[in-house]
Length: 271
Ligand code: UTP
Image 1 (cartoon, rainbow, N blue to C red):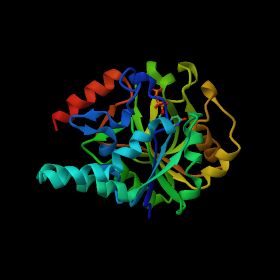
Image 2 (image 1 turned 90 degrees about the horizontal axis):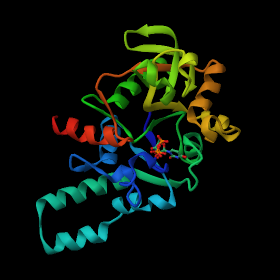
Image 3 (image 1 turned 30 degrees about the vertical axis):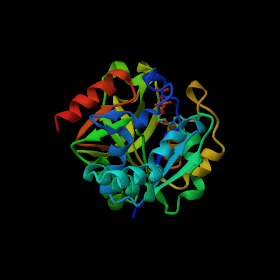
Image 4 (image 1 turned 180 degrees about the vertical axis):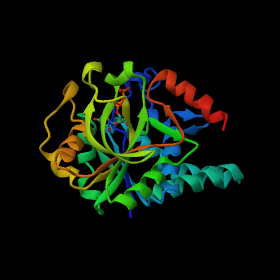
């Protein structure tokens, strides 16, 4: 059973500047709630018991958000506001399940994942990218179900406009399992339109095997000089490790760009 999740949060968030110049993007409110809480709620509902956050020194306020007990206690002592008590209890619940590790140089998602190596106990773990919100359906829960059926790694997949393939990790699909699930034959990080094997893109939900850490230990930087998790996944697929692409139901919201961030609040307010 998958009980652990990791969440990389150590990136710079440049696409959301100036909002992110002093404030981590994961704490920015989306319809009155920090983005990271939507991700944690998805994990809890999917049966995850422990979450490892990869943060940087610059993002210490993410840890402070969950460790502000004395502040809450003082306020609650002064005024017994039921809303504040409820919010504090929720924060305490999150705090109990989160561990923090540090990546102080943003060398890439692969390097961020490697920082969690000593914390992962099972053979597989879930990874969620906090910029990628999926609403109306719990994508992590569906992916865990598929993992349990096939004993494989699983990654979320979505059709994207062909012209935009160079912004995404793109799949080459193999054998069809059913309407929404395919085995993956290859995955390419940000291919040029002419080299893209399809228009099916990797979205930020992954069930990864623990053996990925051994690949990441020796991995050289790839596109843009970064150590990409996609490149480590590609090496595993080349060694015939089973990876399934799951076309999720639910709506994808890209909270990492300014227009996507603004749209996501509007979409969530309609729920
Ligand atoms: P992105 O590269 O999409 O986002 O990383 P970013 O770096 O935060 O933001 P931009 O592109 O400058 O606007 C995807 C996820 O991986 C994390 C980020 O925090 C984000 O959640 N990440 C990225 C790391 O934890 N470490 C890294 O070295 C790179």
